[in-house]
Image (tube, rainbow, N blue to C red):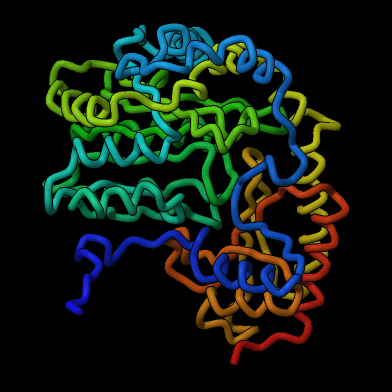
Length: 408
């Protein structure tokens, strides 16, 4: 029979979180081998339970989720989001008409890139980054151009590198803050510098802020929309991480700043939202309760909180591996750490193979740094979601593995 090939636009697309290392973990699991999967930021599989506030809201409101709702979302969910972004994050007068609720930020990223990019258009994206953004840019026919986040500067974006990559084809810039995969929080000054580049070059600003409520160490998250009310900013956020409901697929996209010149783009988003009628209404039912329940989230990141304790345990154990060529920037948000491994010392030329070797020997799954558009085979992303004892043991196992490792 005639072969059915993959379309050309899918050739550059990759999703290593569910890629070759993940597939190998499934094979091991089928053999009865227990694998510690540190591949996905999925708290629910590590003993984080559904918040009581969301459980009650779902039980009380599930009948509202039976029919389709408006294209943008349920009225009460939209209002709760508007109140959160305006009152808590300082957005410039966002209304419910400026918000679209989606089946996770992933769907909204796809809608945004499809509405924005023509073939050959470029969007500046961080390196490393969460690849849903570069992937959706590729699928839309655009080209993601990576700007450097400098590990030597605490993974802060390199402003001069950003400036050097703006050209006549550049339509937008993406800021992921707090960042996935590095777990760092950008300073206000760095954000202002990036926004100034966008201002000088008439760029659309995409601000992925889904981890804005998972900030540790007494630090403060600054929203791009609040810092630049004169710019058109597209902010994405959601409940997957802050309220431990990844499977609900509950995200939203907010348009702020001047919008008259962006009417065509907004219409393109609306057309796509209309095509899918609405997003999952049961996931929308819990949004007001979630945004009213900041205590649940804060309890995880304050002293004694589980996420903070697990971060500290990971840092403590990885510090012991510095003599083995492991280095890292201490994360202060989300639940990721992007660790560097001395590739020359271990003859690592293929970081996917490194993760496969580690998986097969220690039955622990990490994700290779190139899966986050990092150009060198010398990083891995670590998920800090298992409890302290399991995380500590996993980092000790990494050290044990490295002591005898040389890639063949």
